[in-house]
Length: 126
Image 1 (cartoon, one colour):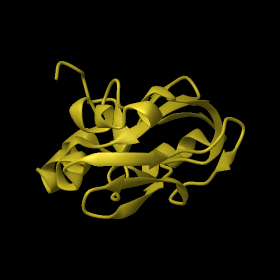
Image 2 (cartoon, helix red, strand yellow):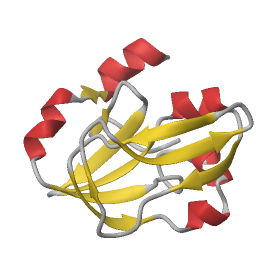
Image 3 (cartoon, helix red, strand yellow):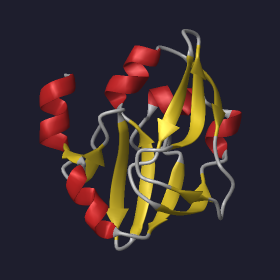
C-alpha cells in the first residue's frame, strides 16, 4: 500500500484514526484484519451518534468470531462508509483506504496524545 501511515494513530485494540483538522477517519489496522482472516459482516453506527474514546461503536464479524470496534476518540459520527456494509471484504483488502469505517468530529483533539503512533504500533504488532 502506498498510503503514508505516519499521521495515523492506533488504539491497542487495533483501530486506527487519521485526523485532518478536527475530523478523524477511523478503520481497523492491517494487523487486525489479517488476524480476522475474512470479514463477513460489519455493524456501524448511524450519522449523528456520539462515540466515546475506547468504547464500542460497532462490531465486525469474521469467520472466526464477532469483535467490538472501539472508538479511538470522543466525538460525533459525521459519516459512515456505506460501501463496506455491502462489501465487507474491502476492510480486509484495503484497510487504510477503501476499508475505512466512520468519520468522527472530534470533541477533544488532545485525546490523540493517548494513542500510539504508527512506529510504536508497528513495533508491537508486526
